[in-house]
Image (tube, rainbow, N blue to C red):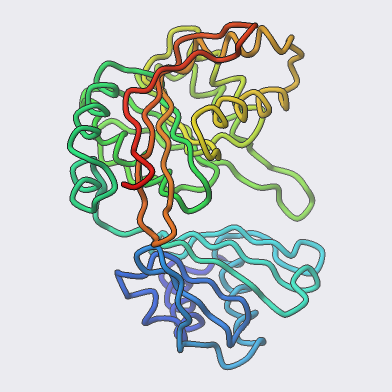
Length: 328
């Protein structure tokens, strides 16, 4: 007999009660549990040690096993990694022994209820008024945009803000590895990849979901993050007339983002000469928006770069629409 969802929710709340103040604190963006008695939090981009802790390693492990049961995913010595979400939508990535010798370790990324827009990012100091107007125009003209940045730089936040600019009559399909985007448009379809079960069956990949998306009449396709062979599928979709696609990749500069797209496209099962692949990327991607987290924790849009084409003798041809000075 299945257990009612509200019972699981109440049980989870009891197991995670030691960090309940952190889960309620709107200023906390991440909770990093290195061990049951060693917890850090991120506030405004800065890490600080928290006083909260679990009574013991056993209690922390019990909380994670209860969470695994809540999301119907395995968690044991053979499968010691758990990807899950708490009932409030916070994303959890956990690793338990023997893969984590010091004991259960997890990171909880919290998603604030306030809807992020370009105007809100301007208020927070992440972008200038000039960039707000520029990005508004690029999204409205249905440019294919890649958001590039390092881990924790604010790629998802910026992607959220860009999606909010889409016209309300557009059919938007969102494909994510783990649901993070907070899309408040009226016509949105969401897909989320699924890991395999304990027997290795039932996995649903980003690539499979993306291919299904192409047959569902999307006006605009959003991929939360490009991590593998789906890069080639996205490039082909852009080339075949799907305009206004938005996604993110890891990269420290716009040129790095384009090269990373190459690497991930080569992870697909389609063999293609490198020169042809680069030419297709240059034709498919219109804009790369670069975000960076500074040493003081502030997140900034540093580049808005237009991709103008590919020249075999010099590589990608780009032009800068906006670039933040080193001292800004």
